[in-house]
Image (cartoon, protein in one colour):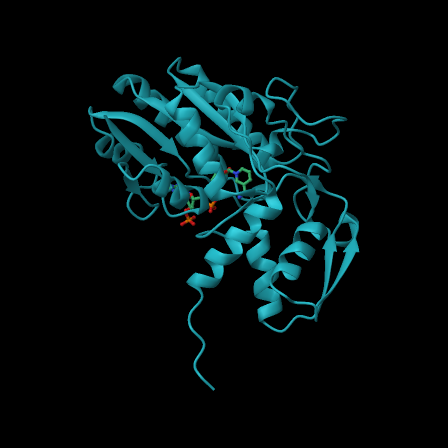
Length: 285
Ligand SMILES: NC(=O)c1ccc[n+]([C@@H]2O[C@H](COP(=O)([O-])OP(=O)(O)OC[C@H]3O[C@@H](n4cnc5c(N)ncnc54)[C@H](OP(=O)(O)O)[C@@H]3O)[C@@H](O)[C@H]2O)c1
């Protein structure tokens, strides 16, 4: 059985590489999933499992640049069609941004979707397109991912502080479940091993605002010299609206796998350790 990882250079893609060491890995440079001919050439008849971690995750850019639709929707359709021909299973990642964020309890897999931005709409179309082909598909929705190998909020905050910032204003009225890419990949491994299909939510336990996530990361890094101020979303006008409360319910994942996601605070410690280990050594003074 041949397993393939697409988007293998991103946060989830790298983490999947560790969970599926047997997989053949394609970074964007090696395989652009919008290139249908290249995709068909790369995924031969021996392919049995395709893990798609490729996505255009630039949420604000998506409002004005339609390129994300090619990656997050059109390519997913072509990929699903090819997987059906190969009789391969497709595992595809999706997002909490398929929900409006007006919910009153954590979002379950069958709750009504109603994305509030272009990225969420394209990701939702991608989910639906994947299922339309009638093959075995697992869609794993997740939220607020941090990990090695991609642009993420925790890294952005720490880089600002490492660049000299000592006074940060951070949004405190958006709530979700921060998720470590490594934990997400391990969750996907558990689901794949149990041959689960359909839509399943996975996120680390506990919810947070961006302010709480930034504060925790800075505290764990010992940066008591940095002032973090909570501000409303309206203080930072952005091209894309965000759902104010996109907390995913992971009880289906827990029932199906017997696994319980650990807290995001604990997972954050592991990410910070990975980040420190990857930092270039400082020259001795
Ligand atoms: N990041 C989050 O907070 C978040 C939240 C919820 C759901 N998700 C979902 O989680 C999944 C994994 O995303 P991530 O967090 O790992 O983001 P990421 O770090 O941005 O990884 C996405 C990867 O896809 C690659 N890619 C972009 N366009 C491609 C193309 N045409 N062909 C092949 N590869 C392409 C990117 O390459 P380049 O870097 O070279 O562009 C990048 O390596 C996605 O489905 C995303 O929608 C992410």
